[in-house]
Picture (tube, each protein chain N blue to C red):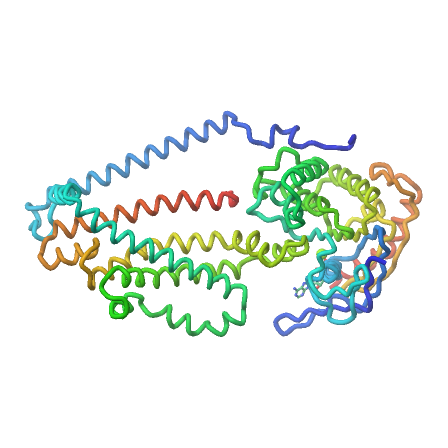
Amino acid sequence: MAQNIDEAAAIGSGGAVRSAAVAEWDAAQAGRRRMVLLGRILVGVLFLGFWEYASGRLIDPLFVSSPSAVGMRLWRWTVTGSLWTHLSVTLYATAFGFVIGAAIGFALGLLFGRNQTVADIFDPYITALYSIPKIALAPLFIIWFGIGIESKIAVSASIVFFVVFLNTYAGVRDVNPIYIHATRIMGGGGGEVLRHVIIPSASSWVITGLKVSVPYALVGTVIGEFMSANRGIGFIISQATGLFDTTSVFAGLFVLGLVGALINVALRHTEAWLLRWKG
Amino acid sequence: MAIAVEAVEKRYVARGRETVALSPIDLRIEAGEFVAFVGPSGCGKSTLLNMVAGILPATAGRILHDGRVVDRINTHVGYMTQQDSVLPWRTVFENVELPLRFRGLGSAERQQKVGEMLSRVGLSGFEAAYPIELSGGMRKRVALAQLLVYEPGTLLMDEPFGALDAQLKLLMQKQLLDIWAAGQQTVVFVTHDLAEAVTLAQRVVVFSGRPGRIKAIDEIDIPYPRDPFRVRFLPAFEAAYARLWDQLAPEIAKGEAV
Ligand SMILES: Nc1ncnc2c1ncn2[C@@H]1O[C@H](COP(=O)(O)OP(=O)(O)OP(=O)(O)O)[C@@H](O)[C@H]1O
Ligand SMILES: [Mg+2]
């Protein structure tokens, strides 16, 4: 074809060339990352150093324990295996509650988002339920499901459900109808519209909901464990509080914080990959 | 007959206000015909295409496409909308192959058809790019490739080349004419550019200002194959352009006076 134009050939292979500017940009980014990392380590060391210093000198260790004592406690838990016994219970309940709450929230969010009338009918009830602090449901769940892991799963699932449901709903309402029409005219059926248009378009909302709700799932589980349990990190913390064992309290809190942070890193990477089209 | 518009009227009701977008119009478009719509902004051209595509219901009257009354989404047309309809979460390749997937074509066949169409619109090498990484004109060409790749019998095109520079526009016009000559599709082509309408179409429909009516229909007496690079130097082109401009100019002036 004589009239054929080839813009790609004119500006290089699809524009994906690694030039000096790219290298320079990468180097600048790496430098900044190094500085941030250094700053983080510095803040952590200063904080722990001050804590260690203050403990016994400025404040009674009975109240604040000390980083070295907390570290020793964590080490002992690790070697005796009790850390994993309790942590695995908490993680299991968190993961289960998250998956159940997220699945139901996502499915109902899609349904309501695609059906204005259903959404309008249920709206006041959902708002009312949403306004109840889910923590207030924990005692009820313990009555229903017992003091075992099921009641903790129920608490975290009920928290996750609302966050994911409301985000999915908002995301589905937000889909540009142009995309739906164009896809249907091209011959896409209902399922294909859902798969190729609605879900990807709503994905940034849904992912935000999932990301926000993971820490909530952990919180829900731990609250359940506080109230009544015989295993789990929340159980350890509440038991230690009763015994004025602040070292164990801090050790338990540290484990929760670490788990939360690790989950967050994993989620950020997943999000970046799923939303790569947003540039 | 490919498209019959029978006493079709469109009024929008939004927030307690009624806008008459189209006063009753009648129009017949034959199978294989290339028709252009021109008219002042806001006269209802996009509204009419949306109704032919079955996205919008008519307030009164009816539209027939290939003998069927259009009363739902019309999957027998290909529609390149005025706004961007390329899916931002799919790469260029994945966008163009989508209609082929819906038709159940195998991977190899999709690969081959999409590759060929992307090279026709000058986007070879951009298969893996996401729409956000493209310019507005490039996205338009993705939409064009997507429209043409599955060979619908009727093409509705709403200002498809508006975002392109003058040279690229001529190249795309040439491609479209070649494809039309080979496939004999029915084409309805909306444009703001009178020269483009005269270059491409067999008939040009001039709309009045809002509420839109059909003010004039002009046959363009230039034989095909037409060369978009040279057709403008023909006396017949100039005559048609002048005739259409005389119809259109007062409508545009009216619009600006409001
Ligand atoms: N969804 C809507 N609600 C209310 N009014 C609308 C809506 N869409 C279009 N209109 C009105 O209908 C009229 C026709 O709009 P339309 O988009 O069909 O014009 P057009 O001829 O395609 O204009 P342009 O050349 O600028 O694209 C306009 O006056 C516009 O205000
Ligand atoms: Mg328009």
